[in-house]
Image 1 (cartoon, helix red, strand yellow):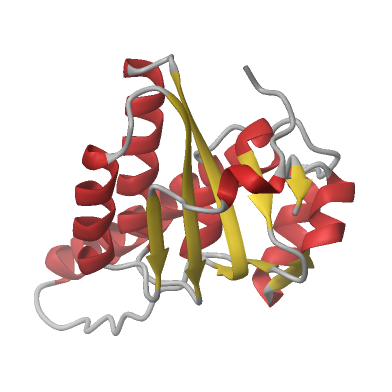
Image 2 (image 1 turned 180 degrees about the vertical axis):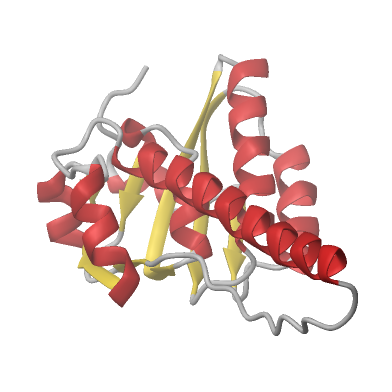
Length: 188
């Protein structure tokens, strides 16, 4: 089932997504996915400079669910031009054998970002609770981020240590390098 697909299989993708990974993209994704064939190869094409990582995870969970629910259908990712940030998160939900990139495409992997102003004002116990709540949010976000990194590198030659060392400074990976690292099945 996971044979190398020829470029002709990507000529008319069933799902085409481009732009920011946001709720509008999710709506379009769901509509297209529900109209897609329930058998055979179903290509999902994406070009994005990034966006909301939680929306990417929602889309990814749909890929995981529909792959399990319809084993006679092979959902395949095609990254085109730029797959940054949340786009790479989405790609990580496809098994490596179902990840393809077009020539010259760049992946970008980075740590999740947080912008937060913590105002400490009030009774001391309330201040401690506020600081602990923010710390717990950060810790949970790191766990979620690292789960995504693990999905991305599964079956590749990339180690978690390498991702954790390179992600804080935005790791850009060209399509051929992604192939040589084993992050994708093929470059078309």
